[in-house]
Length: 204
Image (cartoon, rainbow, N blue to C red; front, side, top):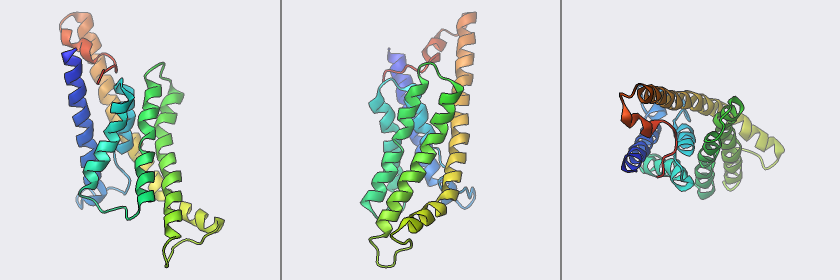
C-alpha cells in the first residue's frame, strides 16, 4: 500500500513537472522554437485519467499544471477565455478513464484526438464572443465572423493535435515498456517490486 502511494505521488509530481515545463518551453523558448499549443498538457491529463483510480486526482493534474505555469505566462485577458481553456483540459482525464477497462484501438484514437478538437471548438468560440466586446473587434458578429475565427484557429488545432500524439505516444510507450519489464520480472521471480507497476490502479 505504501509503495502504491509513493508511486502515485512520484508520478503525480512528474506529470506536473512535464506539464509546467512543457508550457514554459516550446513556443516560449528561442532554442526549441516549437509551434504554439504544442504542449504535453492533454497527454498528462489523459495519462492521469488512465492511471489514477480517483477521478479527482486525475482532474487535478492538468488543473494544477495550468495554475502553476500561468503564474509566469501572459494573462488570458478575459475570464470566459480562461474558463474555456481550463475547462477544455478537463476532457482528457475523463477520456483517460475509458482506457482503464478493456482499452481498444478505437478508444485510444478517440481519447487522443478529442481533447484537441474540444479545445479548438470551445476556445475559438470563447475568443469570438470575447472579441465582440472590443471596440476594434477582429471578427464580425455573424456566422461569417465565427467561421473566420475558426479558420484562424486551424493551425493551432493542428499543432495541439501533433503535440498530443507525440506526448501520448511517449508517456504510454514508456509506461508500456515499464509494464513489460515488470511482468517479465514477476515471471522470472527476480523483481518482486515489479508487481507495484504492473497495472494502472494507483489509489491516490
